Image 1: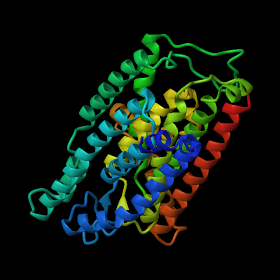
Image 2: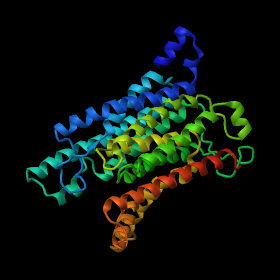
Image 3: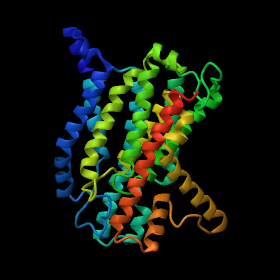
Image 4: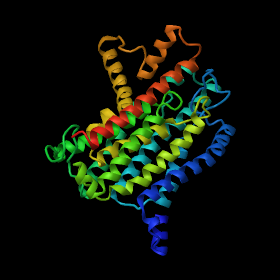
Length: 378
């Protein structure tokens, strides 16, 4: 917004460019986060505002949730770089409201940790009662907020008309159209599932951050190409006017995540927390819908869906049989226990590092595969 005002005053075309504003958003968010995270960590340490136990099982070195600061940094960067339209506003509504839901859980965990210190509850109670919002109520809120935004976006965004891309088909041959009664549930569930998927993935240091960056890179590239009529016609993908305004927002989130990785790299001094992971997942979900790339989520967001499905399978199978499919869910904990039992690794640090790097590599491979399938294999 401020860059747009500067352009109107100076008529310097560089300030109008979406590539320039996206680059600026990424750099500004990265610098802001790099500057604010140490102060934020110091502030939360001073007041013992930790929602997690550290790897030693105590809170002598608390690890603080970063998601609340994510919201502030992205909001500041957005005001500076973004030209607001209905796409940007809808995406921000999802990101902010989902982030607030996650923040309630983070704050409740801090309160419950203090109750442990006072002896009011046991650590075992903490493991099961830490969330401020129950899983059922939280999922209900995800769906209601997603549904409200989906209906409003369907009616007020001209290009959000129920059409969607399908892997291996060009729009010249097959361009499916989902009617209102199918598209709205599809959009609602996409946002809610990815919010849960990113939240489930945020179990080890950096585990959710890299797949989030690759997912955002995918929707960023698609947004840039789809908003250009010449390129979209050449590549046989739908032209979506106005989608380019999402690019600075995407850049702001990526810049924040890169700075977050600076401090979250093992040993972590700050974690994403529910306020970060839930908001991020909801944002990624609505961006995939806006780019008409919802059917590419199983490819590009493979890690998030794998984590989400592992939890659903584990819960469902256990309720039916009182037995478990996985050693522990989400699935990264299954691999952790399996590798621990193998006796091949010197420490938990080595086990977690191996899992994280393999997930990160898989995320990059799936990003490349998704881009190739979306842009060329039709």
